[in-house]
Image 1 (cartoon, rainbow, N blue to C red):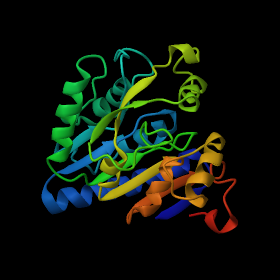
Image 2: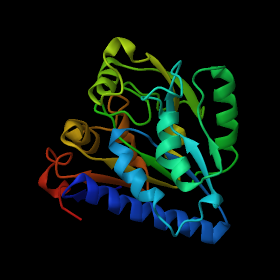
Image 3: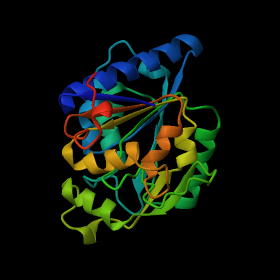
Image 4: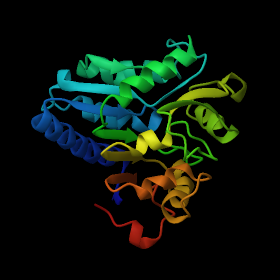
Length: 250
C-alpha cells in the first residue's frame, strides 16, 4: 500500500484523478473496456469532477458499479448516492453502462442483480473514501471481513449516521436511514487497483487508526493494508495525526 500526502484537497483530488485516468486508459488499451467502482460523498466531489473532465478517456468503454446506497431513500433526496453519482459523474462523462443500487424497491432483487453483474468479470479499479468511523463503503465497525456476497444489507452505526448529518445531507439523525446496501469488503478487495481519496481534518483520527492500528473489523479500512495495489490519498489535514514517516508529501 502507498500513502500520498498533498497540501490540500484540490491537489490531492487532481493527483488521484491523474492516477485514475492512467489506470482506466491502460486497461482500455489492453482489453478494450474497463470496469470501475466509484464512491460518492462530500469527500469525493472534487476527485469525481477532476476525473469526469479527463478528455483522454473513452467513457463509452467504461462500465461503472455503485458502491453503496441507503435503503428507503428516494433518488430525489439530496443525500442519495444514486443522485450524486448520476449528477456528478454519469451525466458529466456520458458513461452508458452503469449499475445503480436501488434501495427503494425490492432490495433482494437489487442484491441479486448487482451481485450477478459485478461478479461477471473482475473490477479493474475501485475508488473509495474512508468514513469518520473508519468504514469503507457502508461497512461500519465491526465490518464483515468474511462474507463472499458481493453486496449485502448493513446496519449503520450512530457515528456513520452523524457524519451524514455533519455533511448536511440530512437535517438531524432521526432522518438518516438506519440501513443501507453496501458492497462487501471482499468484493472491494477483489479490485485489481484501489484508490482511496481521504481529505479533511475530520478524517484524521480514522486515517491514523486505519494506517497505524491493527488490521481489524473494528477499523474496517485497515483491511486496505492487505491489498497489493492500493494508494491512499491524503491532504495535510487528514494526515495530521500520522507518524512523521507516513506524512511525507508527494
